[in-house]
Length: 59
Image (cartoon, rainbow, N blue to C red; front, top):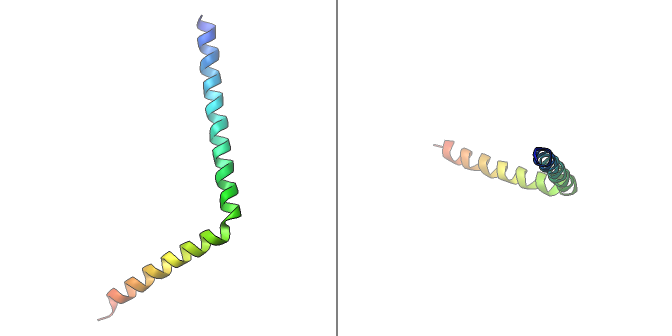
């Protein structure tokens, strides 16, 4: 009985690692596929922040 519990625990841990690796691979794939769009969004956000800071700094 103890062997079965140990085996099941090791299987569950192994499945968790595989799931994490698959999720990371999917995220990396999405970043690679949508790199241009992500870059444009980030640049737009920083431009907006810069504009707002400039507006606050003008007397």
